[in-house]
Amino acid sequence: MTDKLIKPQTLKGFRDYLPGPMMAREQLMETARRVYRSFGFSPIDTPALEYAEVLLGKAGDESNKQLFRFTDQGDRDVAMRFDLTVPFARFAAEHMNELGTPFKRYHIGTVWRGEKPAKGRFREFVQCDFDTIGTESNVADTETTFVMHDLMTALGFERFTIRINNRLVLNGLLEKLGVTEKSTAILRALDKLLKIGRDAVVAEMVEQAQITAEQAGQVLDFAALKGSPDEILLKLSPMLQGSERGEKGIARLNELFASARTAGIPAERLALDVSIARGLDYYTGTIYETFLGDLPGIGSVCSGGRYDNLAGLFTRQSLPGVGGSLGLDRLLAAMEELKLLPAVSTPAPVLVTIFDASRVGDYLRIARALREAGINAEVYPEAKAVGKQLQYANRKGFQIALIAGSDEFAAGTWQIKDLAASQQRSVPEADLITAVREILSLPGA
RNA sequence: GUGGCUAUAGCUCAGUUGGUUAGAGCGCCAGAUUGUGAUUCUGGAUGUCGCCGGUUCGAGUCCGGUUAGCCACCCCA
Image (cartoon, rainbow, N blue to C red; front, side):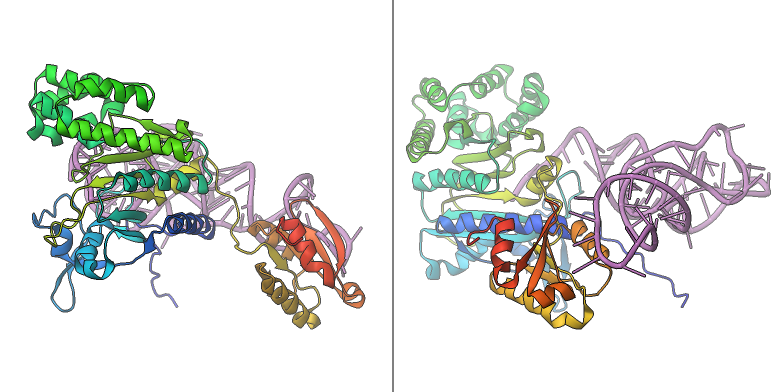
């Protein structure tokens, strides 16, 4: 009896999800699924655990990937996936003959990283990826923009900006400046422009990338261009003249924005921002970042880009592609901060109270009838005081409570109580489903 | 990984130069005509003061360690 209790606790960086947040999470995932499917992306899944060499790549550079890595019972060197992209590269190389190209897939899954946890950064979190591989067509880049846009509106956001750039444009400029081989360090510094300011970025470029202050200044002048996409592209054009890459980048951006306009994507939600570079080395073309109008500080909630060769580590076949990833947990954190999460912790809108213990079958029967009509319903399991049962309904966020005692059973009616409106009326059982639908504003009322 | 801050009731926090039975608000539980929540009134319980050790007659308070969280930096699929 006096055994020492085990302290209930989760590992650092790992979290529990209570019903309220979890229902919001599931809804986000469901929305993402729906939007991805509407564009023809197919679902796939891959194992959480892979051979370590698959995830590590050729370099075997474990240090900055922070893998959870161990030896399994069969003495294999294994690791948990730290993103969905590398497993997808392995997957694509392994199954390309069965899939054919172009191939569009979405993948919603948990990933693990042994990084130090911080705000919006955990050791276990969910990513919602979508990619189109096997085509270099700019149509795929444009549609990637549409996916991000439709995803955000489907999630209930009106005020957001998808910032778009193209690495070819940046690389074209670096090429003209003759500093191509230092691009990684330069872009990394450029990415911090908003955060640390122009002077600090120049300093970092000079120090880290070893270019002249003049060259750094030119990169920043370039990145500081403001205006509509058309205006910026017009100014960029002469600066990149003669650079094959740069001109191609401009052409692709031009086409992307023109198509978006034709297809009816609101112009105010798209921006050409030459300063975004993203930290990822493998992006080679279009780059996307999505910021919330009401909470830009939390960072990009939906990002992505084009890459030349997804699966170079696993196959000699070249697999170009473009895709993106919804940062589910970061978005959830943003919604929490913006108070967009409802305080509901039940997936059922209707609670059937038990008033007369001898009529349990009738309460269970009516709940079943509701479910058959597509309305989620829960039966309170005990014949406690009605006040207690209503208190439970109120606390969990039920919208409707059904009550019936001897009077109602004699008359063949139910008391239907609209908790939020604080209104109650008696309806014949035959009209109950309709009355419930009415309160819930469902069709068929 | 580096630096800083924090840890007291379910939650947000107070707690004097170290001193008796550790407090508030919210929430929770019970009751206020036994068929009605959220509002009102009354009453009640909150707890190994994160954990381990040290100093002291005496530690929520001081010191060391440890675990967890927050902030900044680093890094970034």
